[in-house]
Image 1 (tube, rainbow, N blue to C red):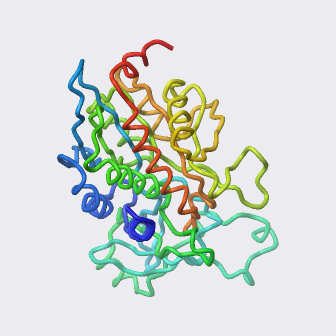
Image 2 (cartoon, rainbow, N blue to C red):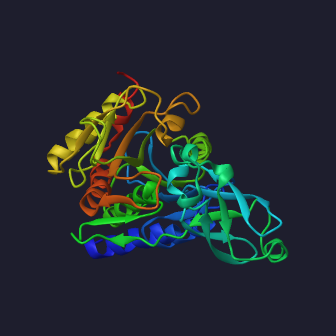
Length: 356
């Protein structure tokens, strides 16, 4: 894939709706891009999209590699329809209520309905309210409908997505938009699959776009248990450098993919990723990850009797907002590094993962 195709890909994936637990449209979009590069593709019982490409290993025991990035995005859910037509809502995934007032949204009712998130105007706030962050209970979605009209079109439990088209920044190499956490990781799977098309590799590869990560790593938990790969790499995002962030807490946009190091990440896999990066002249960054991470890597690592796993992240500014920002080079190089890593894996390496 060339850079223009990758830019179009990530803008398409950012635009597609897939709130946790309702990822059907996002899965369909990703499937269209993956299916041309793999042996077969399917969705499992939980909804994970799984694409499989068989390896060419002819000696020893066959082995498999899973590359996993989550498909779902944060969003909202309707919890109540007020008499006047306003919709009360709850968060699906981790959402900071400070970003919500004034946001345009789409309510996925009996038909998609455009709305805005309303709140009391700043002029009408009390002194106490001005010093506080907005609370979910004081916010509502305004569809400009009466109560009767709203109830005919919307039901409690309907998902709500943010209506935020992706933006190509003036520099041309950076993009901003919703759901880049983790459609950027999913795009890297597609870049990797395209790079491996027609290329021999010993590992059989599962490309997994997992569901419901934002509400508890559920898709990766089920996929890892079902597929039982011999090793895995989770692909997610990490915090990109921005004003006000301390050194060491965030990573340079355009500085390359970020390799995590810590108890969740098998040392032989992180070392191999770094070796491949040096060999193929990819610039990478390192992230200390000593605690329990909030990524699919944790769910994969502790599945069944344990699966050796690594985490590769794409630097992203303004995480869990509608203007998440990344640098195109980081996305491209994440996908290509994954392809080089997959080609480097052989039987002796996999057998050695038990000895560390």
